[in-house]
Image (cartoon, rainbow, N blue to C red; front, top):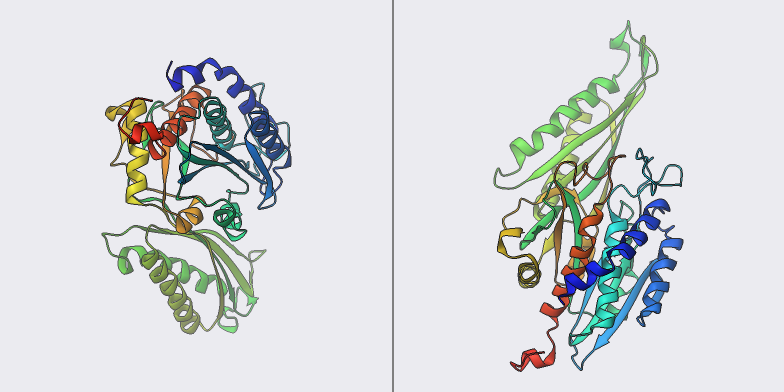
Length: 398
């Protein structure tokens, strides 16, 4: 019986776990219940579980054979601070919180792989099961690295996976180089001089200056970034004033910046600062910019992307492995782990149309239960590809 066939036999248990997590969502660094469920299950499988890493993170360690190589498999656990619109039985029971990105499914898939590998340790080395908190904007991956994840659990490479609605169920996407963009926040305060709307010459209008700033920022990508590179600068909020006949004393803007390369990231930030200084000088206002670098680009190393591709090919065949997919402008804090260790981040198709539901971060989103066994089987295939049994290294059948 293949790993996928055996995992299919306990699909209902994976669904039960996933639905339980979905109904009890926990946001960044509050994943106490989820972490307890994960650690308890790992320990019930005979896998050593280490709790309290990056506050609510869990790492399981499973060793087999005599090999010294080790890899990490990472799943995120946190939910989003948003209200769910679904009405099915496993909908969120926590007001204002929901699993709108599929981390409940990611957690269940990695637990399914842990169950299979604990029962069939046909690999040589150590597998670390990394259950990470606070992926959604709060940098749990960064905190795990800063708290010594890779020193405490030495590993040669680390791997991640995320579901993608719109990709057919049963497919995987993986390639070397950028998979996801960086994620930076900009907050701008424009300070002028308030006054009567009938006498604008007696005021210093922050709305006019802010509007000029928005227009200038939109020119960065089209005129300051090479057309061979990718970047997105989006101003998403603009707040100023309270009534029709008053020029306000200040205006506030905010937005995001996303790129695939660190050198482009540096250039875009420098250009934003230059534009803010220029607009302030031109309009006679003060501009305060707060630029917050959140997540770096998620960049796969070539060798590890090849291992991930080989594992997916062994599982579903070449027709279902996308190796020329276009990188996404969304961001992922698994990037911090990839900065610290070589590794690869892959996409698993959540399905197309009704089967796969709507895009993530939507109040009607739900993870596709049909792909739970496949995701677990991918992790198993990856472990056997990256840490082949010693007998296979010697050219013998395992």
